[in-house]
Amino acid sequence: KQEVTQIPAALSVPEGENLVLNCSFTDSAIYNLQWFRQDPGKGLTSLLLIQSSQREQTSGRLNASLDKSSGRSTLYIAASQPGDSATYLCAVSGTSYDKVIFGPGTSLSVIP
Amino acid sequence: GAVVSQHPSWVICKSGTSVKIECRSLDFQATTMFWYRQFPKQSLMLMATSNEGSKATYEQGVEKDKFLINHASLTLSTLTVTSAHPEDSSFYICSATAQADTQYFGPGTRLTVL
Image (cartoon, rainbow over all chains, first blue to last red; front, side, top):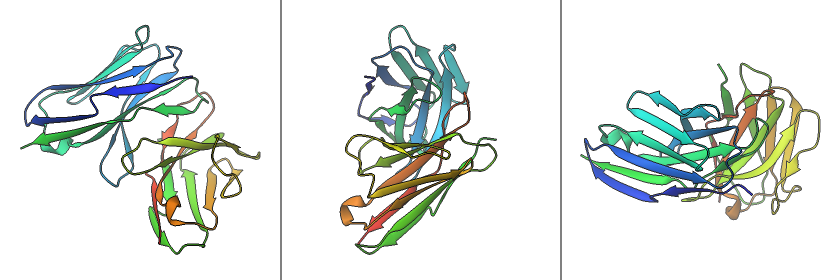
């Protein structure tokens, strides 16, 4: 049974810092891994999608890496801004039709 | 491309009433749609999987008679919360996938039952 964990559960950093969010999964047989952002009371915003054959994806100040063999992914946020404050969720799917298993999320607060 | 919409985005209803939430894939045909629920400060949990034209498959612990799911077409799935109670207040998110493709998520519907 796939389980997804995220560390840390909460993170507070001053503006401008580079930071890393961690995601671990127990079954390395994944189809893809996604990172989402969720603002309070809002829906999910997809940030980055990494297919199982890929090692990383980049979008602006965000970079996500994937190491299937070790069951880990990291989301790197460069030069953090107060607007980055949100909960970040990672999620994996076993096949294209499989349900997506979400991690518990990391609550990020960037202090001006 | 690959846009999924949900309607309504939020709804407030009285206890005992039924609420229908729609999930639409706007620019692709979704062979499979998923419904998730998220309680405050918790992660998303899958409720059910629905394939067009067939009965939904519910996850353990989800009451199929309470959460009615209909996937009548390749672009529309509906979730009806019957006889809603305050404990059903939650954030409901759907996702849709085309054949051999990634799941695309809707923006979510916030249900508040008074």
